[in-house]
Length: 164
Picture 1 (cartoon, rainbow, N blue to C red):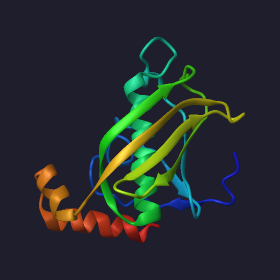
Picture 2: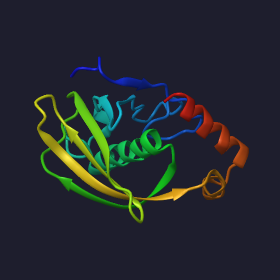
Picture 3: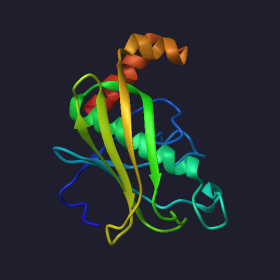
Picture 4: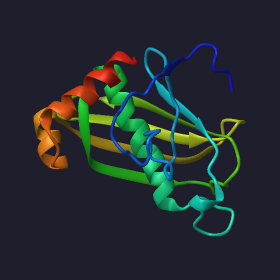
């Protein structure tokens, strides 16, 4: 998987996000990359993320697809969102300890933002996909939802934007 044409997002998010925060040592610690239209992440899932032995838990798969969609909107539109709906298709098993690529792109910006995300393997075989509907929110609304200081939320957003 060629990373030469992609820009690394130096994720400065101060929170404890299970999917993307480097502060969460039990999380996925997703590393994110972008080009003009797409966000991607390359990861290997550790065995602690199993459902059935050797196969990633469906909730972990959903988390990866959801996170890629959120970062797609943040990187492309520079907006913060919360998930309103997610429709997932589990197409093939996602095995642990294999190199995965998650990709996201925006497919609609009409009444709300819709993203399409996939998880695939080296040969571009798609293992899971989702279509997400997002609600755009302000920093103040996000702070209220998270029950944290609005200044901290603004600081997190501004630091994350600088990484793009």
